[in-house]
Length: 232
Image 1: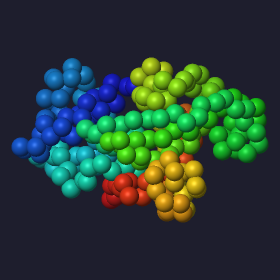
Image 2: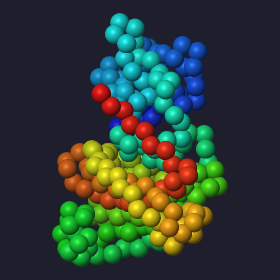
Image 3: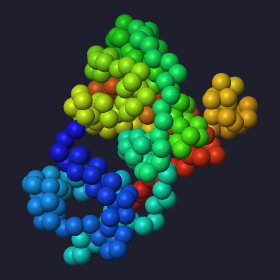
Protein backbone atom coordinates (compact mmCIF):
# COMPACT_ATOMS: atom_id res chain seq x y z
CA UNK A 1 0.00 0.00 0.00
CA UNK A 2 1.36 3.41 -0.93
CA UNK A 3 1.84 6.18 1.61
CA UNK A 4 -1.00 8.27 0.20
CA UNK A 5 -3.36 5.28 0.36
CA UNK A 6 -2.44 4.75 4.00
CA UNK A 7 -3.12 8.41 4.74
CA UNK A 8 -6.43 8.29 2.85
CA UNK A 9 -7.48 5.23 4.85
CA UNK A 10 -6.51 6.88 8.12
CA UNK A 11 -8.39 10.07 7.28
CA UNK A 12 -11.42 8.02 6.20
CA UNK A 13 -11.37 6.25 9.57
CA UNK A 14 -11.13 9.60 11.35
CA UNK A 15 -14.07 10.93 9.33
CA UNK A 16 -16.16 7.81 10.03
CA UNK A 17 -15.31 8.12 13.72
CA UNK A 18 -16.77 11.67 13.67
CA UNK A 19 -13.49 13.35 14.58
CA UNK A 20 -14.45 16.39 12.50
CA UNK A 21 -18.16 16.51 13.38
CA UNK A 22 -17.99 19.95 15.04
CA UNK A 23 -16.66 21.87 12.02
CA UNK A 24 -17.23 19.28 9.26
CA UNK A 25 -13.85 20.46 7.95
CA UNK A 26 -10.67 18.41 7.76
CA UNK A 27 -7.24 19.98 8.52
CA UNK A 28 -5.62 22.14 5.86
CA UNK A 29 -3.09 20.77 3.41
CA UNK A 30 -0.22 22.34 5.36
CA UNK A 31 -1.53 20.92 8.63
CA UNK A 32 -1.78 17.45 7.11
CA UNK A 33 1.75 17.74 5.70
CA UNK A 34 3.06 18.51 9.20
CA UNK A 35 0.88 15.86 10.84
CA UNK A 36 1.81 12.98 8.53
CA UNK A 37 5.36 14.17 7.73
CA UNK A 38 4.95 13.77 3.98
CA UNK A 39 5.03 15.98 0.89
CA UNK A 40 2.17 18.11 -0.41
CA UNK A 41 1.87 15.83 -3.44
CA UNK A 42 1.29 12.84 -1.14
CA UNK A 43 -1.44 14.70 0.75
CA UNK A 44 -3.04 15.82 -2.51
CA UNK A 45 -3.14 12.23 -3.76
CA UNK A 46 -4.78 11.13 -0.51
CA UNK A 47 -7.32 13.95 -0.76
CA UNK A 48 -8.24 12.89 -4.30
CA UNK A 49 -9.12 9.43 -3.01
CA UNK A 50 -11.39 10.88 -0.31
CA UNK A 51 -13.13 13.19 -2.81
CA UNK A 52 -13.67 10.33 -5.24
CA UNK A 53 -14.98 8.21 -2.37
CA UNK A 54 -17.64 10.79 -1.62
CA UNK A 55 -16.34 11.50 1.89
CA UNK A 56 -15.24 15.13 1.39
CA UNK A 57 -15.74 17.99 -1.06
CA UNK A 58 -13.76 21.19 -1.77
CA UNK A 59 -15.01 24.71 -1.16
CA UNK A 60 -12.85 27.19 -3.04
CA UNK A 61 -10.92 29.39 -0.66
CA UNK A 62 -12.21 27.58 2.43
CA UNK A 63 -10.76 24.05 2.34
CA UNK A 64 -12.08 20.50 2.33
CA UNK A 65 -15.35 19.66 4.08
CA UNK A 66 -16.90 16.38 5.22
CA UNK A 67 -20.00 15.39 3.29
CA UNK A 68 -22.91 14.86 5.67
CA UNK A 69 -25.40 13.46 3.14
CA UNK A 70 -23.89 9.98 2.68
CA UNK A 71 -25.79 7.09 4.18
CA UNK A 72 -23.59 4.86 6.27
CA UNK A 73 -23.52 1.08 5.91
CA UNK A 74 -23.64 1.26 2.13
CA UNK A 75 -21.62 -0.40 -0.59
CA UNK A 76 -19.53 2.23 -2.36
CA UNK A 77 -19.78 1.55 -6.09
CA UNK A 78 -17.04 3.91 -7.29
CA UNK A 79 -14.15 2.10 -5.63
CA UNK A 80 -12.82 -1.11 -4.12
CA UNK A 81 -13.01 -0.24 -0.43
CA UNK A 82 -14.37 -3.60 0.68
CA UNK A 83 -17.17 -4.48 3.08
CA UNK A 84 -15.10 -3.66 6.19
CA UNK A 85 -14.52 -0.06 5.06
CA UNK A 86 -18.11 0.27 3.87
CA UNK A 87 -19.43 -0.70 7.33
CA UNK A 88 -17.31 1.17 9.88
CA UNK A 89 -17.88 0.20 13.48
CA UNK A 90 -19.74 -2.99 12.63
CA UNK A 91 -18.66 -6.57 13.24
CA UNK A 92 -17.54 -8.21 9.99
CA UNK A 93 -17.18 -12.00 9.83
CA UNK A 94 -16.06 -14.01 6.81
CA UNK A 95 -16.84 -17.72 6.58
CA UNK A 96 -14.79 -19.67 4.04
CA UNK A 97 -17.07 -22.11 2.22
CA UNK A 98 -14.57 -23.31 -0.39
CA UNK A 99 -10.92 -22.63 -1.24
CA UNK A 100 -9.25 -24.49 -4.08
CA UNK A 101 -6.79 -24.09 -6.94
CA UNK A 102 -8.07 -24.78 -10.44
CA UNK A 103 -6.36 -24.60 -13.81
CA UNK A 104 -8.05 -22.14 -16.16
CA UNK A 105 -10.03 -23.75 -18.95
CA UNK A 106 -11.05 -21.81 -22.06
CA UNK A 107 -13.97 -20.11 -20.31
CA UNK A 108 -12.10 -19.19 -17.13
CA UNK A 109 -9.07 -18.02 -19.13
CA UNK A 110 -11.35 -15.61 -20.97
CA UNK A 111 -12.83 -14.34 -17.69
CA UNK A 112 -9.42 -13.92 -16.05
CA UNK A 113 -7.71 -12.67 -19.21
CA UNK A 114 -4.96 -15.26 -18.84
CA UNK A 115 -3.59 -18.27 -20.66
CA UNK A 116 -5.33 -21.63 -20.53
CA UNK A 117 -3.80 -23.71 -17.74
CA UNK A 118 -2.99 -20.72 -15.51
CA UNK A 119 -3.44 -21.66 -11.83
CA UNK A 120 -6.36 -19.78 -10.31
CA UNK A 121 -7.58 -19.58 -6.72
CA UNK A 122 -11.33 -20.11 -6.52
CA UNK A 123 -13.02 -19.01 -3.30
CA UNK A 124 -16.56 -19.09 -2.01
CA UNK A 125 -17.26 -17.27 1.24
CA UNK A 126 -20.16 -15.92 3.26
CA UNK A 127 -19.87 -12.30 4.38
CA UNK A 128 -21.62 -11.61 7.69
CA UNK A 129 -22.33 -8.15 9.16
CA UNK A 130 -23.29 -7.92 12.85
CA UNK A 131 -24.03 -11.67 12.85
CA UNK A 132 -26.51 -11.39 9.95
CA UNK A 133 -25.68 -13.05 6.59
CA UNK A 134 -24.96 -10.18 4.22
CA UNK A 135 -23.55 -11.58 0.97
CA UNK A 136 -22.27 -14.69 -0.77
CA UNK A 137 -19.05 -14.13 -2.67
CA UNK A 138 -17.64 -16.15 -5.56
CA UNK A 139 -14.17 -14.99 -6.50
CA UNK A 140 -11.13 -15.88 -8.58
CA UNK A 141 -7.52 -14.75 -8.05
CA UNK A 142 -4.71 -15.29 -10.54
CA UNK A 143 -2.16 -17.33 -8.59
CA UNK A 144 0.69 -16.05 -10.76
CA UNK A 145 -0.04 -12.58 -9.32
CA UNK A 146 -1.41 -13.53 -5.89
CA UNK A 147 0.91 -16.47 -5.07
CA UNK A 148 -0.50 -17.49 -1.69
CA UNK A 149 -3.88 -17.58 -0.01
CA UNK A 150 -5.16 -19.78 2.80
CA UNK A 151 -8.29 -20.14 4.92
CA UNK A 152 -6.97 -17.78 7.62
CA UNK A 153 -6.45 -15.01 5.07
CA UNK A 154 -9.81 -15.68 3.41
CA UNK A 155 -11.60 -15.40 6.75
CA UNK A 156 -9.74 -12.19 7.60
CA UNK A 157 -9.23 -9.67 4.77
CA UNK A 158 -8.01 -10.78 1.35
CA UNK A 159 -7.61 -7.22 0.10
CA UNK A 160 -5.81 -6.26 3.31
CA UNK A 161 -3.37 -9.14 2.79
CA UNK A 162 -2.79 -8.19 -0.84
CA UNK A 163 -2.19 -4.52 -0.07
CA UNK A 164 -0.32 -4.76 3.24
CA UNK A 165 1.55 -8.08 3.05
CA UNK A 166 2.14 -8.43 -0.67
CA UNK A 167 2.50 -4.66 -1.21
CA UNK A 168 0.35 -4.81 -4.33
CA UNK A 169 -1.50 -1.63 -5.30
CA UNK A 170 -4.75 -1.77 -7.22
CA UNK A 171 -5.02 0.20 -10.43
CA UNK A 172 -8.70 0.30 -11.37
CA UNK A 173 -11.83 -1.83 -11.40
CA UNK A 174 -14.82 -2.48 -13.61
CA UNK A 175 -18.19 -3.13 -11.98
CA UNK A 176 -21.26 -4.75 -13.50
CA UNK A 177 -24.60 -4.76 -11.69
CA UNK A 178 -27.39 -7.22 -12.37
CA UNK A 179 -30.36 -8.86 -10.66
CA UNK A 180 -31.73 -12.39 -10.49
CA UNK A 181 -33.37 -14.79 -8.07
CA UNK A 182 -31.36 -16.54 -5.38
CA UNK A 183 -30.41 -20.17 -5.85
CA UNK A 184 -31.61 -22.62 -3.20
CA UNK A 185 -28.12 -22.74 -1.69
CA UNK A 186 -27.83 -18.93 -1.59
CA UNK A 187 -31.27 -18.63 0.00
CA UNK A 188 -30.18 -21.01 2.76
CA UNK A 189 -26.87 -19.23 3.33
CA UNK A 190 -28.49 -15.78 3.46
CA UNK A 191 -31.44 -17.05 5.52
CA UNK A 192 -33.95 -15.83 2.94
CA UNK A 193 -36.84 -17.45 1.13
CA UNK A 194 -36.23 -19.59 -1.94
CA UNK A 195 -36.63 -17.51 -5.06
CA UNK A 196 -36.12 -14.18 -3.28
CA UNK A 197 -34.47 -11.47 -5.42
CA UNK A 198 -30.85 -10.42 -5.20
CA UNK A 199 -28.56 -7.74 -6.56
CA UNK A 200 -25.25 -9.02 -7.94
CA UNK A 201 -22.12 -6.93 -8.36
CA UNK A 202 -19.38 -8.35 -10.53
CA UNK A 203 -15.97 -6.83 -9.85
CA UNK A 204 -13.01 -7.12 -12.20
CA UNK A 205 -9.98 -5.61 -10.48
CA UNK A 206 -6.75 -4.70 -12.27
CA UNK A 207 -3.22 -3.71 -11.37
CA UNK A 208 -1.93 -0.31 -12.50
CA UNK A 209 -0.28 -2.03 -15.49
CA UNK A 210 -3.67 -3.27 -16.71
CA UNK A 211 -3.30 -6.89 -15.59
CA UNK A 212 -6.50 -8.42 -14.21
CA UNK A 213 -5.83 -10.32 -10.99
CA UNK A 214 -9.29 -10.69 -9.42
CA UNK A 215 -12.79 -11.35 -10.70
CA UNK A 216 -15.64 -11.63 -8.22
CA UNK A 217 -19.40 -12.00 -8.13
CA UNK A 218 -21.04 -10.84 -4.91
CA UNK A 219 -24.64 -11.88 -4.24
CA UNK A 220 -26.26 -9.54 -1.71
CA UNK A 221 -28.99 -9.95 0.89
CA UNK A 222 -31.62 -7.60 -0.57
CA UNK A 223 -32.95 -6.74 2.90
CA UNK A 224 -29.61 -5.34 4.07
CA UNK A 225 -27.56 -4.11 1.14
CA UNK A 226 -27.64 -0.47 0.05
CA UNK A 227 -25.49 1.10 -2.65
CA UNK A 228 -23.87 4.50 -3.07
CA UNK A 229 -21.81 6.39 -5.63
CA UNK A 230 -20.91 9.97 -6.43
CA UNK A 231 -21.80 11.66 -9.69
CA UNK A 232 -20.86 14.92 -11.35
